Image 1: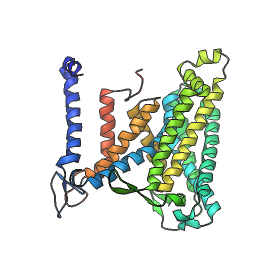
Image 2: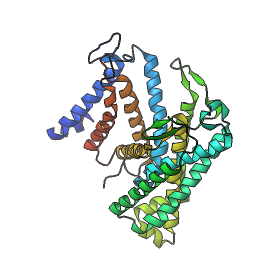
Image 3: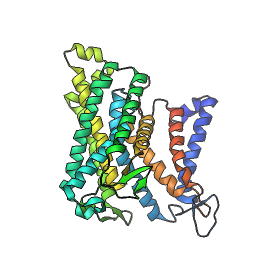
Length: 375
C-alpha cells in the first residue's frame, strides 16, 4: 500500500494525504484532544462531553446512537438502493412513500388501540405494532407497483423523464397526505410545518438494557431498531444472491434483452423488486415514527438521506448501502456531540454540513462510491 502511494503523482497524492490527515485529526480530537465544557465560555477544544478518555460513557452512548441510527438509515435507504441503485429507476417519490407509509401505520394503530394521541408504549402490544407495520408495508408495496407499472415501465432508461414523473407523484402524494392525514392529532403538535405524530413501540421495548462491556444502560427500543436493520440486510442478501428471483433481477439489470430472450418475463421480476423496495420504505417509516415521529415535510429529508447513503456506498451495492449508512450515522452522531462549543451551541448547528463533506470526500476519490462499479 505504501509503495502504491509513493507511485501516485503529486496531484493525486496531496489531496489523499490531506483527507487522511483530516480523518486522523478527527479521531484524535474525539479520543484525546477534546475538553469538557466547564464554564460559560470555551475554546476550539471545548465540547459538551469532553474526549472519550475523559468521558467514556458519553462516547459509548454516542457510538450506540450512531450505530442504531445507521440501522434505521439502512432500512429506508435499502429500498431506495434496490430501486434506484440496482434497477436504475429514478424514484424521486421515495420520500412520499415513506411519509404515506408512516401515516397509514399510525392510523391503523390508533384504530386498534383506541387510545388517541396520548398513547404510551406500555399500552401497545406486539400485535398492535406488527399489524400496522404489515398493513403499511403491503399498502405501500401495492402503491409502488401501481406507480411502476403505469408510469415507469414504458420509459425504462429515460432518467430525466422518470425523475420528472416521480417528482410529480411526490408532490401529489404529499398534498394528499396534508389533506387527509392524520385525523387524530391535537392542536399544537406542529413540526416541519405539519402535524407530527408518533407510533407506540410494543411495551416490552420500554426499558433499558445493561451493557456490561461499556457499563451503560441503553434503550431496548433503539437496539430493536438496530436488530431490524441487521435482519433486513441479511434477508436482502439471501434474497438477491441465494434465490432464483434475486438472480433473475440482477441478470435483468445487467442485460435485459438476453434475460428476456431466455423466456423470462423480466417485467414481473422488476415489479416484485419495486414492491420490495417500496415495502422497505414503509417499514423504515414505521420504525422511525415509533422511535421519534413522522410529520409532513419529512419526505424531502428522508429522500435526501437515502440519496446520500446510496451515493456514498455506491450504486447497486448492498454492502455499499451498509457502509454508507454506517458512515452517515457515525458522522451525524459524533458531529452533534463533539463539535466545539463556546458557552453555547455555536458549532453544532453545522453538523449536517459534515455529512456532505463526507460525501464530497468519497466522490473525490471514488466517483462511483465506496462499493459501486465503475461505469
